[in-house]
Image (cartoon, rainbow, N blue to C red; front, side, top):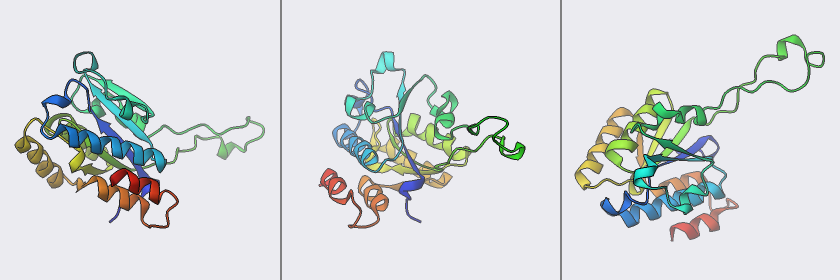
Length: 199
């Protein structure tokens, strides 16, 4: 099964300025997180951010913040407990018109179009990213974790998170895999722009 750009949303977890210097391979992790954000923007994939205790750990960098529709400030390690699910799965909207112009059976709320695939990347892989991704799986989203855009202070913690997420049903992939699965073809109108981001 390949990622479907029309069904995808992107969640960027806690790439915070005071946290990143403590992480293993932080520069590469952040670079890939920014690439994901830029690709999502080019391909019109809704993008959301989270920040863990931002007063203490600082904000996400501007390159990530500016492409996110919203950024969730949280104290819980898992973002689902703080309201992320409501952002990813919008409420049904009421039909337009007035009571006389709409037949009674059409006056019920119309469900918002759903994007059930959530691509997740961020830090720390074994804490906030793990708990957010597990929460999304519990909410019956299809969860895809971008391994080269995730970091922890140690490789062991990061890899343990990937093992646990795979066992729980998350798909593991890389930034380039996301790019080419979202594009599907060299004939895609954004192919050259996306390819330039990963070269």
